[in-house]
Length: 333
Image 1 (cartoon, rainbow, N blue to C red):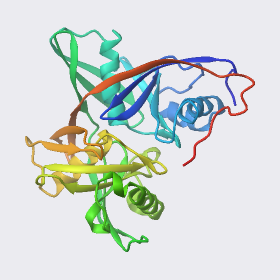
Image 2: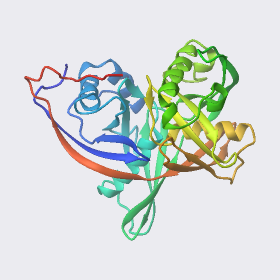
Image 3: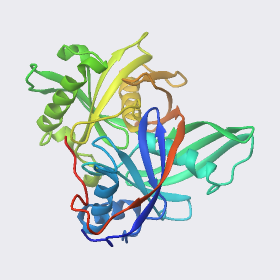
Image 4: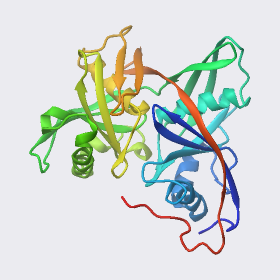
């Protein structure tokens, strides 16, 4: 498996809008690379790093929808930490809900000093670039975190994908990762738990259908290529209050409104004129949790700022028993 059987691994677990984020502050493996982007490439191909991901993400210590991150050094002194995001299928390029959780954790743990009342920037290097978790505190408590994303933009519009429910027309946008987006009603579904099985199946179909499409290629960095998620959306109360569910990786369901997915939606809504600079999008998840989002312009892109909150759920010391035949674990989806 690549790392020491019998190791104990400490984690701190958070959730952002219901979506888990397992933080490993001191991974007991070597993750080589001069930058976070290079470390992600190393992690993908390294048995020890990937084995640790599986142990912490797969059952019996995790589950098919678990998410987390390994803390690594930043690219340079301009950031306070770096992170490799992971899920059951590998290592992702971006994670907004994880960035929000990391901001709350960095301040609550004392890793980054913050005033009792004020705003503190926690600058984080992620595989897709440098992002900021802007942590708001009041009376010594974290009250909100703004995720300042990477520049986001529309890659392609009116892309038609054949599916078992007929042709699906999607918009592909980049918000730290590439997302295909479509109205749930266009394929006869709604953003509700009762439709989740069908939404997962169709999300997988659309992602597979776009695998070789030019819209799945990042225009400047092929390490960021590939459709990461499919966003099904609907209006909840007008065009600037929307509900969505993001099916990412291989059929994973984001319980939060999805941070990087919200950045992609902001780029789409800015492009079509639904959302203008200074206006706020209220973005709701399939479980009812909410982010707010706005943007400033950054040349041909927009710079999304997404606000949410994360809360600790536990601290763990996981044990890998050398006699355990289930190591590194399993998933049932």
